[in-house]
Image 1 (cartoon, helix red, strand yellow):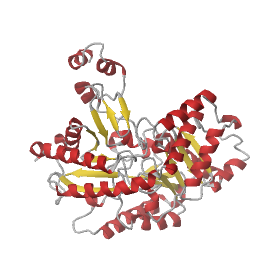
Image 2 (cartoon, rainbow, N blue to C red):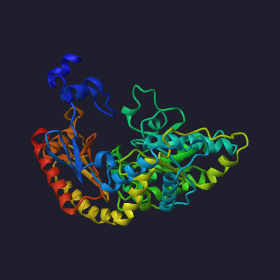
Image 3 (cartoon, one colour):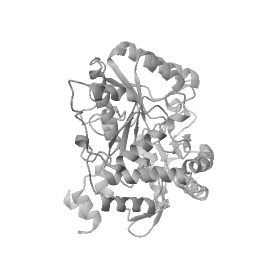
Length: 460
């Protein structure tokens, strides 16, 4: 492979060093060695710049996360001040510090359910991994050790650790990794456009997939199922907005069978959909919640699991488990905590969520207009979150052949025009920073529309 590397990158260049030393996450590695890396040299506001100084509008907020954009001095100051004062402190063994305490207090005050306790980690993956462990731990403590299975949906994305990767319902995250683990069950994704049967209305589609869920619960036994996990709007699994009535009919199934709802807000949380949390668009209340990404605007790694007090009580009083045996060296890291807290304060001080809701209306209007493009089969989204699904024949739902890599081609043309998006198969993910202006939204969609036009001959 070494000879092949030198064919595309000069010896000693950053590209050559990248190809020689790095193992890139969630990357088609063979193609990476054929094409080389894309560089990010600096960022400011909603734009990033490559090593040649070319400007790109960041249409995916980094990786669904840089909500306040790049170069926010308030967050830089929060990090540097805290680092000078207390560069590290643990939370193991009753040790505590103010940044973690203040952040936990702030998070609880924002929750759309009766929150009790906050556990800190570093990523959405470890948050959802923690969710599984807490479900198992809690049910063991209350004398229901058989209640361990977690229901997750096809096409959902919840992380890449051994456990959270099992919750994820996307084949590349399972194949060759011996996943999923046996305790994970799978149910239908609420993707009406792709999955409805001929002549089936949205209401009939919802009834069918909820009926499938009921059958799954009966087959497995409600006394063996601890929780159901879902994003309010699916992110990396294709930007799927559930049909009207989906969560309405899901709720009684969970309630009647004593199945907890784990709300994965890693992408939808903190204003992304036009409300503080994505689940607030729907008539269901979480039992627990996972948050990350925009919690710190990705300036430093930070995640949290928020649980109700009734789950914490048996943990705090268990006689046969005197030590809560879970945690990470960097749980509640003081510098990360301070940056996350300042992020949440900025959201309030600058009314960022209201701004995102207003600008999100502009984005949704531009998104809806793309349905007229010959390459587009379906568009969907909420707030500053959207997906454009490419189809050979949108009305008949005939997809492009896999070898055509339609999504990747359009995203590459957009990149050449100075716009960063992400192909999710043949769905193009759109998720700009929350601070984007109306003018910049139009810039984003003008470039996307041009990229689609560029691909008409290639894909037509």
